Image (cartoon, rainbow, N blue to C red; front, top):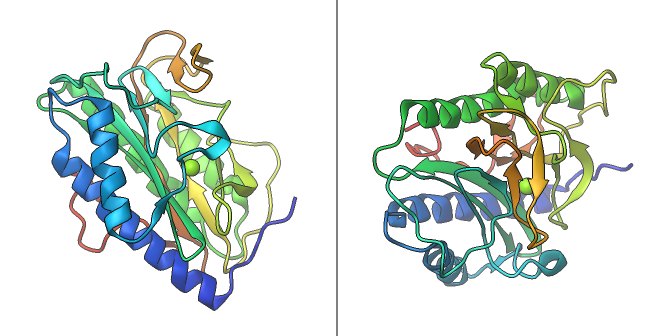
Length: 259
Ligand code: MG
């Protein structure tokens, strides 16, 4: 396994890729409403990415048929946007998005409630988001990769939630998925030592019930085996010798920072 270290120029481009993706997420959150289909939400975001002069990196990735993964309720990740999937009040909707700016990738995910959602659903969304921030307390030069994994998993598990094991975060840069894989639960090994200039997509996927997931027949959509709700939160993060830089959060972003 080799983890790429980004040059100053690549980091500059990834900051921009991240900033633009943060804008895409905020705009899609504004657009999200009960009664629309997941396909309509996808098309809204795809047009916006094009307007920003970028390309969606999920489209055709290993054959994925859309620009975004949109996963509703018990769907964990990789939901395919569909004309037949109408979003309802009370749903929780995970939007996983990525784009390419001047050859460099960004990747981020958010889960939003639609209208009034149950307190249990809101708590799952909040804990999933917070688990990411617990994890990145260790995302700095000199720490070890699986310290991030352990902090995410320990936090989410402490609420009795199931931490998905089959899917991981990943390195990111010139490719959407680079080394290393980043699990979201405690490992017995330490993992690679983190070095300034690494860029990581850290993405807890947390189930309200058990951790087990299954793949649907479309070959993409991952759902909880027990039918419980699932939430996803992800950002592209730059490792520095100080605090990590979260590239896909727009500064002063009320949505990304907890509301
Ligand atoms: Mg990702």
